[in-house]
Image 1: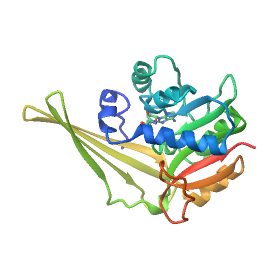
Image 2 (image 1 turned 90 degrees about the horizontal axis):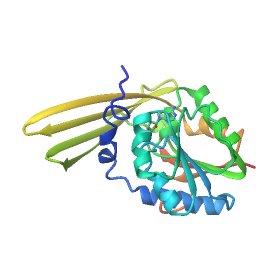
Image 3 (image 1 turned 135 degrees about the horizontal axis):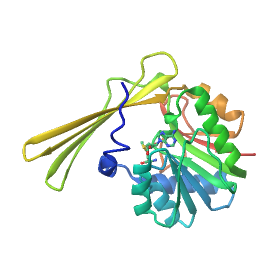
Image 4 (image 1 turned 90 degrees about the vertical axis):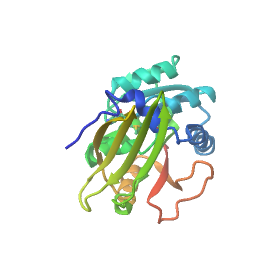
Length: 247
Ligand SMILES: C[S@@+](CC[C@H](N)C(=O)[O-])C[C@H]1O[C@@H](n2cnc3c(N)ncnc32)[C@H](O)[C@@H]1O
């Protein structure tokens, strides 16, 4: 059963949940990759931009940065963080832009929000169409064959007199093209606990299958999932950064 509190009613807690993420390191790392693999342009679109933390960094690096997300409450948060950015409500699996772009990003495994392999192909095709020649599409992905359903991440944060506990875990049933992201939020204030459970349906793919899709559009480089070092993927890890360059 899917539920989506985090990107709607609870979008105000999203940044708290992501407090441990170094958005600067991720944005800086991709900017470095763009310098190496891309053109010298500065127009950028962040797909599934959420509350806009990457857009903020790209603007500060000098990019003309914009964002697209399917949930308006997330875009509302992005607007307060990046008032100068153009923010579009839409589905990354079928978007168009007015002017071709130099860089398109999609962080935090959000490309998996494509609803099935066909939609994933449509997302890749949309990104390809929206880029200038020499433009770059960069995202990270998890290989469905490497998901361990027993692993989860958890952290706690105290804010405004409340204790928050956030948990997240991948779940892959072992076959097929669907996986899910399970999230839970617990908020305890004055001894009273409220909790919410989300389950987000996502596309599952192996890196071999994903690479085949990408290679029908782009020159593809697969790198280790490390935003601070540029290291070719070792053909083993279950997480990787995909750098796709339009010929
Ligand atoms: C895990 S959050 C990532 C947000 C941001 N990129 C970050 O790194 O913090 C996933 C985002 O994807 C958005 N999303 C989900 N499905 C989408 C779709 N089909 N098209 C565009 N955005 C989508 C959600 O609204 C949410 O903001």
